[in-house]
Structures are given as structure tokens and as C-alpha cells.
Image 1 (cartoon, rainbow, N blue to C red):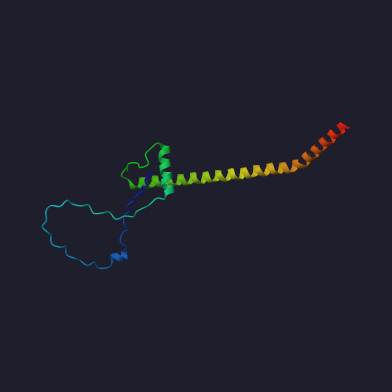
Image 2 (tube, rainbow, N blue to C red):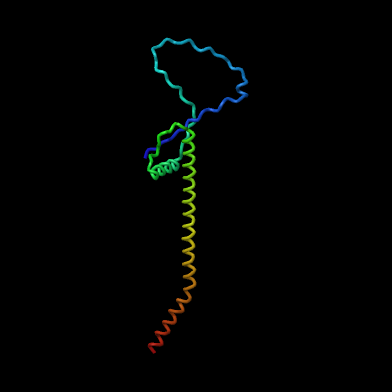
Length: 145
């Protein structure tokens, strides 16, 4: 499965009031250069790249398969809704992981206690079993005499 790194573009923070108080240096724009009509390029939006861990990617893929929806849903144009949905999914995944861990701990404790119970029963039954075998041997000897 190829590793996909989702990205999230966040706007840069606004300029603080102390930075705005400094006088700005005005630089005149360079004279226009006569060139052939070049296609206008949209400037890159400054942002931050968010990388998900392999565990988060696996959980995201598993959640998408469990829900019957593709892992990468079409964006709805609203960053807030996408972020809210992502946080909700992450919280649910963490809850499920904690739940699975708790079940594993309970299963481990149950196995340990079951083993301890069997061991205690064996220790307590051993003397009675030894006496019973001894009595059977004595009874067999008496029958032969």
C-alpha cells in the first residue's frame, strides 16, 4: 500500500502591532518588461505540512473500509468541517485503542488468575491424591493376603 502524506495549508499569522508600527520602506515596482503573453501563475499559498504517522494512516484506512467509504473523501470546501471531522475521527480512534488495550489487560489478568486457581487447586488436592493412592495400595495388599 503506497504511503500517502496528507497536507493541510494553514494561513500565516497576522502581523503584530509592534511590527506594524515600524515604518515601511517603499520600493517602486520594476518597470514592466515587454514579453509575450505568459499564462498567469497563481502564487503559492504559504502553509504548513502536517504528516500523519503510519499508525494514524492505518487507522484512517481501517475506518474508511469499516464505514464503506473511500479513505480520501472529496473536500467539501469547508476547512472547518474537515478539521472537525478529522479531530472527531482521531478521538474515536484513540478511544477504540484505549478500549482494545483495556480488554487485553483484562484478558491477561483473567488468564493469570485462572492459572493461579488451577495451581492452588493442584497443590491442595495433591496430599489427598497421595493418601488415596496409598490406601488403594494397602487395600490391594490386604486383598491378596
